[in-house]
Image 1: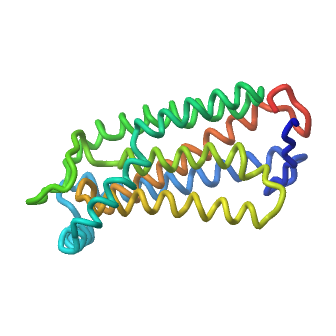
Image 2: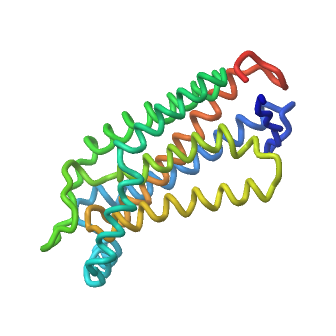
Length: 230
């Protein structure tokens, strides 16, 4: 049986300008937050809050928590998210949801490139911890795990959440995705491979890029209703 999704958008589908305005507003707001965090990064030394949070997590490590953190943080790894994106893309191709496929490619592919460029631009080194809990390489800002998980959630929003039939389902799905991203962020902090500002910058960049890609692909569609991109 062919699945049917009843679209219940946050704004009337007959008003594409309102959709674009909202997307632009979210993108700009996220960019402002990212810039505010990045300004402190360019200062060179970690902020007092960054140091205090890193120290607190390091002082509260246990073998069982470490094992759990390593298992959970894998859920935000490039390997897992890359594989999930490929499977998701194949599903979208099978459903012939072309504009959603375009959104996925732009969100995940472009987001991966953006994260790489930002890491090179800011070249922030990882926290220096005496007993490292997880081996990692590369620069620290913004967190690739957190930004990747945020981008993947953004792709889920554009495909399923905005098309959910009932509002309770929407709220539940948003809650699950929020918990997922926060868990990934907490594990990265716990393992001592990132600062708090790395998490905040990654979240802002992920939200901003996801909003930009969703707005761009929705603008490609013909409004309202039926479209070959549906």
